[in-house]
View 1 (tube, rainbow, N blue to C red):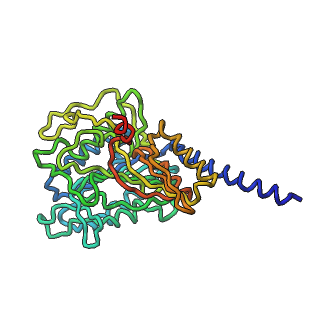
View 2: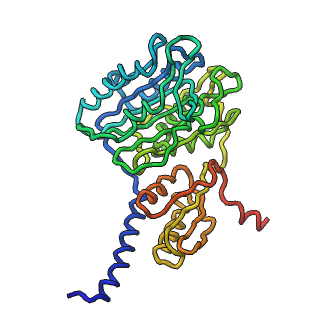
View 3: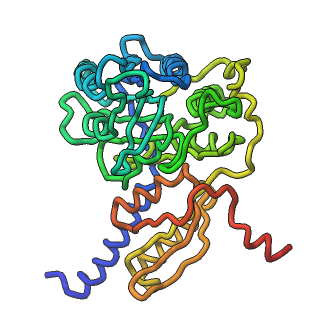
Length: 383
């Protein structure tokens, strides 16, 4: 019979091995062989701001980048002679379900909306057209989208469907919610935060719309000889590093479900993105690059004392991620039974900490978003 002392020695060793396994899993990227990629673009017939043109341009660009066939592209326009939510229920679910059932295996839905956005009385996001042009309600509530397309609320008989949602409207960041662990991955890249407007498409102060920036950055990445991975965090990094138009509303990225960003299966392009001669929208006019990619400042709460070996393992592991993942530890403090780590992390590496939180290793608290410089303390002390 095994002695009590041997059991006591084995338990900490097993706990440390389990912790190190969780740390290793947090940095692994997932490469999925999607059996089908399909696209839904959404705009309103009552659009008065050039969103329909952006929607068509996005569909054409995604067709090129993902090698889509026309049967897997649905350019959805909410008509002005029917309530938007009613038209949604009658049209979209059946079409998407047919594609889901068309083959067995994991699938990827690319979802794009361009138009107006507003917050209702509860502070919830609504996608809108121009209500003044028709007596029919020109608004689709976020819940309509979320319940049918985004939530992993039922078993998919023919394979799970991951979703990437490109959201180009005012207040688009209002969708933000805590990430939930799931086999299904849902990510949203939005034009602005929950409290900001986008620059009106018809404004002569705008250089390029959010959708136009998306198209340009994704084409640039597909043409890049370095073949960078194309994920939402990587696209966000490139957009943030570009010169911004007034009023400098910053894009927002969040993963709603899943563990790791989706590797978008784009095709390599043989030619660079074409230069636009359109006025006032010209993505290539955005040639000014910022020196650093944007980061977040975080407080990482570890539910153990600074003297515990597990805490030291986590802190030392985070410190080693400085080079490859761009994380920078700013400070570590002990608060009786818990340890707080202060650090900055690029958006492209944020998924690593999300995965640690989902596995119960720590709790995250965002202190500040959209930093675009590293810790400057050392430079200032020696200047």
